[in-house]
Amino acid sequence: MIHEIHRVTRFEQVADFTLKLDFDDGTSQTIDFAPVLRGALFGPLADPEFFRQVRLNADFHTIEWPNGADFDPANLHDWPSVRDAFIRLAQSWATAPAR
Image 1: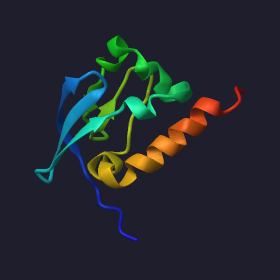
Image 2: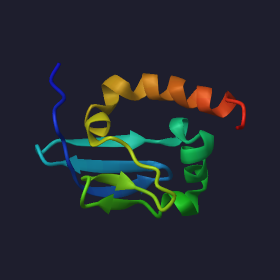
Image 3: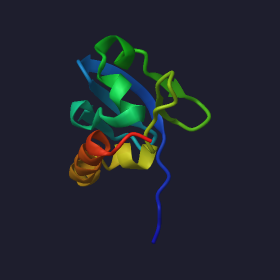
């Protein structure tokens, strides 16, 4: 299986919890992250002020937040095909017992 390498080159917040991401291959995705902002790592991003602290990580070519939350740029690039799986996974984070 080939895992293509994609890099986020720039982003713009276009609405609450929604970013337009540009990639090194000239494509872009507009992603509403609201459905996956759950659990210990991504839950804090549900605060609009915290979500706006997103930045581009130049080393890993993806977006990240001050608490270390980030997404694999390949998943961001292919968001339409992985979105539903991420939402299902996020729902399990919300119901997982605390450790």
